[in-house]
Length: 392
Image 1 (cartoon, rainbow, N blue to C red):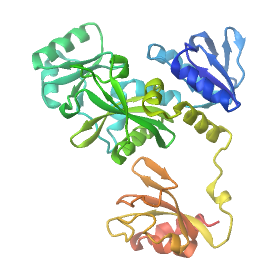
Image 2: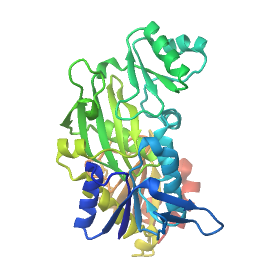
Image 3: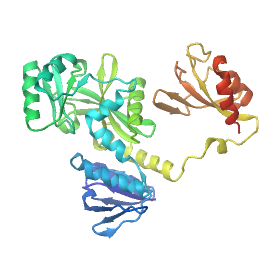
Image 4: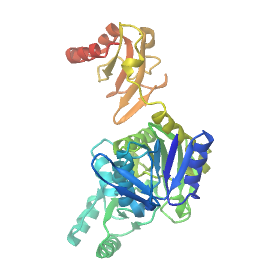
C-alpha cells in the first residue's frame, strides 16, 4: 500500500513509530505537513496539490492533525475522503471529538458514564450551573484544550466564578464539570483500534497535581483493563465514528466516566507503559480494511441451502440469558455465534467464556430451522422472515 501520514513533524515519536511499523510490513509511507496542501473543489473532480505539485490518490491516509489547525486539517481529511482514499479517522469524527461540548452532547444520547457537565454564557447562570453539577470543587475546561492544558480545578464556588468570568472575558468557551473526587490524580487511557482495546494504562499524577496526563509529569502504569472500562472505551469511539482513539476515563464510584476521546492519541506513553506494538496494531487494522475488504456474509457462507444467518435478540425470558457462549449449547445445535451486539459495541467472534447478557443481539450462523426456533415466539412472524431472507 501507499500510505500518507498527515503530520507537521516526521520526527515526533508517534509519527516515526507508525512510519516504522508500515515500512516493516512492506508499505510505502510519506509524511506530509497538512499546511503545505492546497485543495481544489470542482464538480466531480476533487484534487490536491502538495508544495504546488499534484497529489495522487493514496491507498490510506492517517491523520495526525494538531488541535491548532483543526479546521484546515479536517477540510484536508475530507478532501482525501472525496478522492476515494481510506482515511483512518474521518473529518466528521475528528471534528466531533475535538469539540468537547459536541463530543459530550453526542455521547449523552447513549447509556455511557459521563461527569455532569454544564455550558453557560450569562454571568448570572454560572452559580446555578456549578450547583447543578454538584457544587464545588468543580473542573473548568476550555472546549479545545489538549494534554491537560486549559483544565482547571476550582476548590470553591467564588474561585470558579472568577475563573469562568475571566476566561469568558477573553472570548474563551468553557465547560463546567463535576469533580470525580474518588478519581483525583488518576485516570485510565484505553487505546482503541477498530473494535478492540489493544492497550490500556492507568495514569497517576505526581504530588498535588490533579491532572494525570503524561505531558504534565504523570506516571503511566500498564493496566489489565476491566471489562466495563473496555466496553465503555469501545462504545465511546464507535459512537463518535473513530476507528482509532485514545479514550480517557475517570474511575468513578459508579464505574467508568468518559473524560475525553482523543482522535490523534500519542503512542509514546502507551507503548512505553505496556510494551504493546500499538503502531503495528494500527497498520494491521488498515491492512484489514484496505487489502481485505469485507465480503458480504451471505456470499462467504454459501455452504448449504439449509443454512443461514439470523439475529437473535436476548430478553429477560431467553433461556440463553446468563449463560456463556460455551455453556449455551448452541454449538451442539450446529449454531455458531459470529458476533454479539451489546449497546453500541460489536463483539466479533466472542470467546467461549463470554456471558450472554440481557439486551444482547446474537448474530448466528446455522441451520435455518434451528435459527427459527431461537427467535422469541412473539417476534416469530417478523424475525422468521429475516431468517428466510438471510438463507444461504
